[in-house]
Length: 235
Image (cartoon, rainbow, N blue to C red):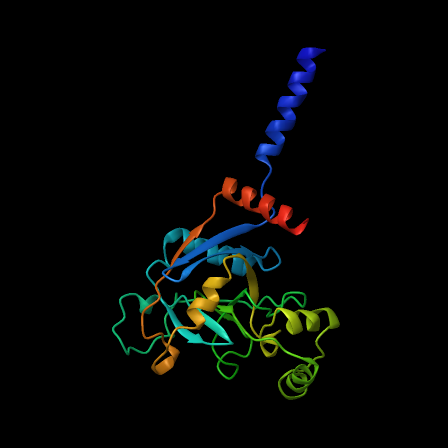
């Protein structure tokens, strides 16, 4: 009986150890801090593409080349590696796009990761860039400003629960259902504010280059992170 109990205990331990984390995570490291981003399972095409590029080192050494305070910070252009001061950036990327993956429950609150893309005239399907992305800083809204943006820039009414997020955390609601949201910052949101505060020059490029390194969290790191996040949410 004792041996059977020991065997069952070992099996339980092995099952727990082998369990996969619920999500996959990436870390973006810069001179202005670092963030850990959860990639959404609801947008598998964007998730898997971002993981592939990160594992290949595609993003390492690229810049946050377009920064607009109270809006977003954008990066992922391979042409930004070692780009000279004043060079126009934002057109680079792999020779493919990703089909849009719009999910109504995924919206542009502060801290989300979303895919950049070409404009509607040349891109009516709203397909995403193969590599360029942005992280939302946004701003806090109120009922009157949300009503105005609904009337002037949106074709739908923002659900009440999302309105509450925009009125507390903030974000950029006019981008909803137009650009694919595929992740969110779960740790280190200060980095976004720090980069957004950087002085910029022509083309919204920071005067001082902000380079990044993007790594994928290993399974053990992801499980530990999810445990920490769960503990924090239960407080």
